[in-house]
Image (cartoon, rainbow, N blue to C red):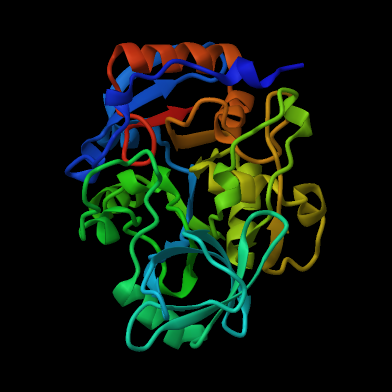
Length: 349
């Protein structure tokens, strides 16, 4: 059985990407044959050459919203940063808070938006009540909020361009809900997607609203003791049908990102294949994929380079093998690939 230390590796800090490649599809691409560990080095736009007519590319269309709010205590003026984590409805949110607060404290973010700290939860988050909810709330947040960039992006200033850079070109306006980008998709351009379709590759979308739980560190040496947080996901009926059709025809289902992969692998495909009436699938998933897992539907994966000891690194190791992924990461470090959210990509096939 694997332990947490099996998924550790050395990463020089200078290889952590602070800005995205420009153009997006000019990032580098490490190709990894999941069966024999063979590696090739390309650029992301070369991915088209490794896709085949009849393949199905599945992308996560969830849209990131600027979840970091900077405010001040109403009475003292002290600075408070609130990170919106989970929408509970009726203006109430589960939040992370940077700064000293107490129950009933009022925080002001603008002349319109205010919040009251209701209580501290047992898991370290806070229950916060805002004076707006629904579309009106998001309209204000989109104006004053900051994009929730990961802490390893340590620029002295968070660029206004991050609102565009830290968002896939195919995120749906109707699918707002992620507090972190499905970063494997950041490499695609609209033109590249057009070329992929022109080659006969089918493109479909799933939705998984990325929460902080995806990136929660594993603190148990025995990885099976780790508990994943739940995230909301959905797949339209037409997409489910297309996936089943692709598999029957012998095509590959290629997930773009670990979020798409986890969404697809959370479905009971055996039941759906035998169903007379396929409906939209909407559910909460806490699936934890690590070596030994048998994939039900995903054949290949487009992904970024993940943090040491992370559940995401365990997932990609399950698709290939811990040995091959470990070797590929050492090779990526040697070749000075750029790592994490704004970094380069892998295609595991």
